[in-house]
Length: 382
Image 1 (spheres, one colour):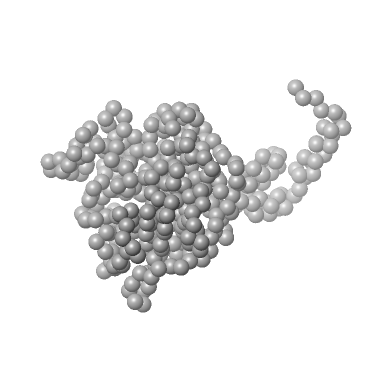
Image 2 (cartoon, rainbow, N blue to C red; image 1 turned 60 degrees about the vertical axis):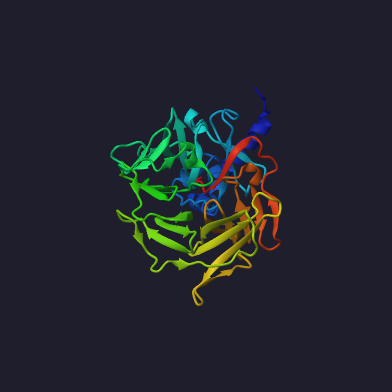
């Protein structure tokens, strides 16, 4: 045990006493000006600060973090979390169990992750908070009462014959898409995922998966902002649906048009959709994602001409591709404005990078990612 001199101990006690003797109003003023991360650290100063924190309004974290999923058992049953505002500092989650290391993350919302697991030939989806370890189990994918029936090798709808052979791992492939929304306090949630041309959803209280009432031909991408679902249809438009009621309601009549010749022909073109902080839809076109010459273009609807105009700049915004959102970089520590953040979803962790719209150049976000098989952006409630 380390022995400290009486003089040093008295000095430390005096310093602690000064902090704890601050009046409650002053402590609360300090706490309410701190970021969410620093707020949690300040609670550990002393019992007086801990007590004051319980009476203070904590700022909600607005900073997206990168969550890294290690190869099975390489870090036990946990994951790593990186805050861009704290360079070089990586957090480790608590033990999340064996199932976590065997699952794949499909989508995120706040602190919550939508996880996909196949065990013994039986697939399932569940929602997990890696910080609190709270879990929400979703309706089974194999159910005679549901519109959707999965077996180990085949996929069919209702009483139809199997539409096509479908390996269950296809649900986590780059060709399938899922979105998640969770309200932190009530735990109300919405999960939407696609399989081929079919779209399925489930909300809190549902015992089965429900099939979307419109069959989507050419569905390319979709994102969720609250209970609003924005869908990009390859054939030429964007549709918006409101899921706040029992059944989704279309809000776009007619849908956003989209007709634009590609800037140049390339076999590697990816289209994504994003929603700004004000709720406006953006289109993101990515060329040559597998090559060093990868390029991003962002388009915004010009309602006067009813056409999509290329955006030369995102201003003080940063766009996060896999979340399908923009954030105000001036309000988010560690984020660069007029930049696009890509976590490599569907392409591997060697594709985690930042793309500057100003310089048209790519810079890596992390020095080494070879210990991780996947990464996702999320906004934890820390």
